[in-house]
Length: 278
Image (cartoon, rainbow, N blue to C red; front, side):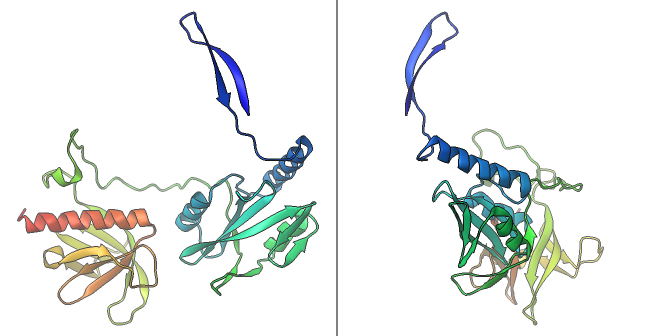
């Protein structure tokens, strides 16, 4: 659809032109109203309906803040009366198709006569089977509005980079540069289970503690003996990386890909400074 418009240019002259306006592909005004009405009803009754949230944003939300069994409903790009149910399943997010037709809701092999029946079914924590054969229980609706945390991260790395310089130009004399701390999940050395530990990086030492509140570290890793830091895809976990030492390779997992990338970058920078003799 094109609209012919006029506008004031601010200098006494008037601009004239055509603009393109893309409307949803709905068959009639009455159909658009029906779609608007039931989505409005969902917005008012279900806090876990996220309307136009994209697939990528849903995955980011559920992986960053959700837990196993967290779920949300969003609009699907397959049509005006289609939805997607996004569910956190351990270390991934699965998406399931939901369709509304003639006022009825189809979900898997089930059909529901009204919106209330459909939402009541989800509230009963149903068991879903994905194409990969894994079973998922819907446990925790993920709300549109999430309370802001009362505890904030403290700034551990903060330095100015002059225009035209890159990360590799940073010098080790920057006052707080090269320190980092946070929780990572670490694989055990003898028993190959995974436990969350608090890590601190300062100078050439990477220490890990049982928890943030413990004053004494479980172990201190001397980075001068570390030969490599890299992403790792050998473990059945996401966001993993490893530190290679002569006597052992340490496998660590971050909460997100961005966080893993931050750890890898700063650790690699540390190794590069060690090799330069700084």
